[in-house]
Length: 328
Length: 291
Image 1 (cartoon, rainbow over the protein chains, first blue to last red):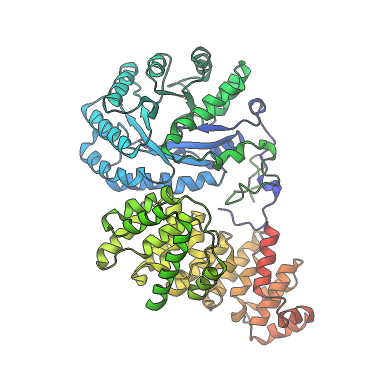
Image 2: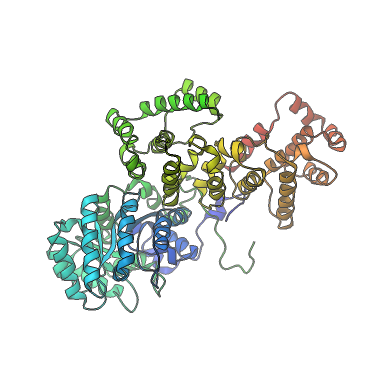
């Protein structure tokens, strides 16, 4: 925690060791609509802010091992709208979240019942931009039951839905997720289908849903494949996220992919749509995103964003010199 | 706070809030407050209905507010005011239900809800019940929530025991809050706190870090042979704000060597007598330097 009375401009300046790819995306701003920051450090927040990330969405998910009681769910949801939101604000990043019961833990039915009861307490909170991430993992009956119940909840609250599509049997799981959403009367424009790949994207787009892609090493999309997809399908209703979490993942996946797109000759407008605007358009249907909250941040050159600008001052944390062996 | 003044505050808040809201929003809120089963939902929905612009206070309202509870609405947004208003007007006949309901709001609160809840502490029913919640809030590290408890809030000075009060003041220095906005700072100064703050200053000095000169505001009255060397140290500081703090602390003290030390600074002594140098003017200079 900071308790210095003497913050100077120098303390707040980004580091001078800007990596090569950041030159290509200088002045661009990014919105990562799927990243699990509770699992990340302040170094990640700092790096994201330096790379131009101005807003993020943290979907409620599985914490790596199953929870055994309701209180840990309550505390987790509270932390998404409380502590984590504050942590992000220290780095000038606007933090939103989606709230839901994830598919893995839907399989613990006695607990899932209790979680369903507390969800309405959280989905109307400020900055909650959707019900998510929900959907299928093993594609069991219990998963389907709580997926359906949460679709109803989203409809009732007029909130977008963020769908996690399964790792295994992905193509069929994705189709089934969309079928069920339509069956419950949800507009495809209110549904963001996440973790797409080359096999699923066409159907998702053809049916009018939003197609989100997770750039995640080894298991999900690589960003060269991503560039090819945008080249083929264009930028409409496509968005990119990092889904960075407790696994080997990269919270800079969105800005890095933007840099790669720039290098491969995609237009600035296309890059803006898939790394910023589309995600905002989709989730702003919640009425909970005010772009003005972070417009001012990204419109200023990253290397000078703190000069003569007080927008970020509230709670702004002083920068530490990572290359120094001296810790003051 | 007496029952009369809480009633007067309620009337004043009614009046202020009414002027900030569109008529149908005011009707929605005053109807919702009567449905005690929908409190949590109403509380959460408020910003969607009221928006989040800053409260505009007329000069007479501001005056009455200061007279009634020594607080201000500086920096309050309309949703914060509406939430505080809701909490002030909750049905309180069933004490158990009232407390359970309000505690549930604390337990699941997002950041601006936390701010509103802690802002409302002085206006909640059964004020003695909320001491533990207030102390719990002081343990938080969410700076806006902390500031809502520490600054412009009459509850801590009125209800916290000495231990919790001292923790709050110490944490206010630790987290770099605007100290001069703590209500009751001078009235609740105590020897235990003065000693703890002195230890804190020594730790900061040992680490070559600066010390907020306002710290000595809580020390002046308790200067003794143990604390006096601290004052001598800041009196010899290169920083003029620290020298001013030393003069003010000596002026608050009845310890003879402190009085003599002040005599060595006739300029400062004169400014203090003339009312040109006060803890208030020092606080102003500190906040100007920061910005």
